[in-house]
Length: 340
Image 1: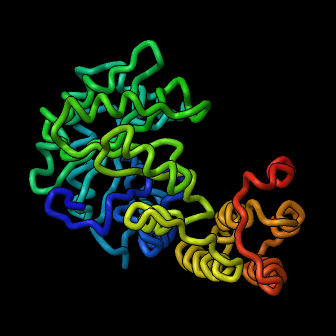
Image 2: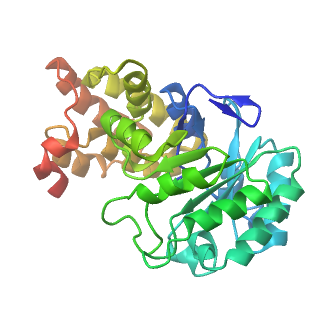
């Protein structure tokens, strides 16, 4: 896929997810077949630029390009400054967040709250595009503030007129949060209204669903978020299915173990031992989701406070299962594990 002068491996994007799409996760997803991985959102508040959290979120050392950095805010001037700063620090694509439904973002009229003010949307987009004329700017947003005010088509036309180069649309409104089912009719409508690429997002959790969403919406690509948590190989599964019509077999447990261990090593190196162990817990839980005995394992693993203890627990769990020659069975086959 071509994006503003960049040739991507494919049309599969990693959705920006706070607390998830850090550098280790983005690198892993790209190795597993993602064409582009968008960073966690970075605040446009200049007072927070120097914080350790913001510095980590803008750390792209060793990450294969193109580097896409998402910025969030509600003030056009601040957003323009944030775009320039990140472009100066190596961002090759600037993505604007108008999709996050979190209260702490929406309460300051940023994220998906901006969809209620179309004039402000235009001012922000125009300011950011003008601030980084050599850097393509993309936009991620939802279908509207609520189901009675879906205005995605209007936002899309504003975006295209402002110089935005690509749109990623989550098939829910802000009021929906992550509840219910994503709808794709609005994305299909937007695709007919603009000439820039449109990426569909929301509930894409299997190769079959990926093909169905592309067919229904006519979208140019797909953005995958929660389904990649603990399952980064979903990108190669979808890539293979779209290319061949054939499903890859589920990965053997031994491979999941290897992927998990590599990911853990990257987390420890990136965050340091104390924070790395804490952050790794959610990823380990995702990797083991759907495997027999995972609930009991998680209880034991969460008690580990050191790298050595955490790694030993992970190795013991996976080596036992690998010795049985098992392959992953996806979580829906183990509802009792999810309820535990």
